[in-house]
Image 1 (cartoon, protein in one colour):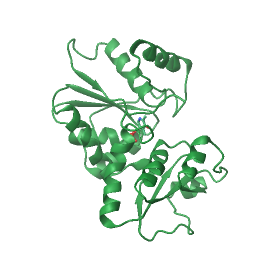
Image 2 (cartoon, helix red, strand yellow; image 1 turned 135 degrees about the vertical axis):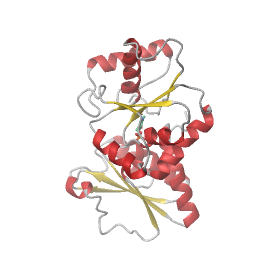
Image 3 (cartoon, protein in one colour; image 1 turned 45 degrees about the vertical axis):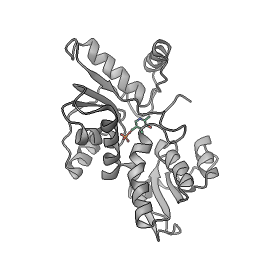
Image 4 (cartoon, protein in one colour; image 1 turned 180 degrees about the vertical axis):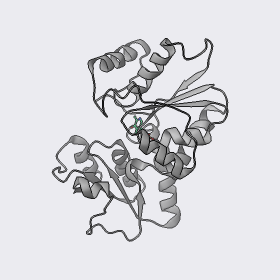
Length: 250
Ligand SMILES: *Cc1c(COP(=O)(O)O)cnc(C)c1O
């Protein structure tokens, strides 16, 4: 609900990078993501709003700006799209023709210390130590690690949405942030897979609470939270904050 396009945690993750760009006189933002990256989608719109050039380096040389409506929209907002091979993507190679002069490179998926710092705004909004437990989903881990870094007096629970626990632990070590509870039981096989049980859970949740959730991130998080509650992992009367990180059903 933060913004119709730069929604959920994506604005929190981007804000510090945009401020840094403005402060240091960068005119151009470059970042990396997959063909359905919510991060690049938010970045392309934010760059337009702040009068910055944007380049998105997209995994998959076989793709083009018409491969999906998100890519087409990003291009319409003025982002330059560069489609690279999976190998070059993995190595985070910026194609030679991309001008890097005066550019700020934001890491893949928007993960970095500045993204984690931006997430601290959640704690300023909800207040410290008001909840015994805080839940969020984990993609790159910026939101989760940002909460581990900034939330005092709460246990932080992260629900993995893909098989990337090793990467999250590496990120945590690099930024010297201690992780807390991380669950690998609600991945449902792999990223973005949408089994019937999960989709039905999301539909029922929306019917009951009139809050939209999608199966990729928030659906997995709430599914995990409900499962843990059902298995009596929390004492009756526990205070739990579940963070809706955005994303809507398409
Ligand atoms: C990007 C995204 C996440 C993952 O956030 P990270 O900080 O990268 O872990 C979670 N939920 C939604 C809806 C997202 O778009």
